[in-house]
Length: 129
Image (cartoon, rainbow, N blue to C red; front, top):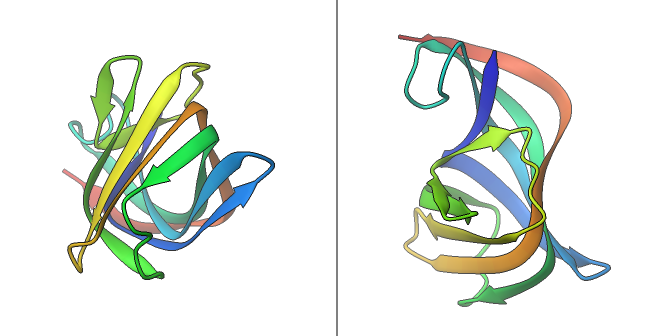
């Protein structure tokens, strides 16, 4: 079973810096669980709290008003662009998280060693066909 964090419609509560890392906290992250490729194949959709962490990160663009909902975005790692980010995510390389919110504010966060940390209890939402 494969999993991925779908950026579209996920809700970000805050951006913080901790020891040189930027932590993007999702109070509602949409997690896709499928037998195949998340975002392409049938499976199920879940809601769960999550953090995307980027080490040595810089933020460009004005920080958006938070909480806010993602209208569009992607994570680019190792030359690959993900709108549904694979879980687990392991890379030591440079990454760029680009987010556009429903109020049309935009932010880019560039750093290294991206990872996704899930927390809380996953909540089943629906089957994906």
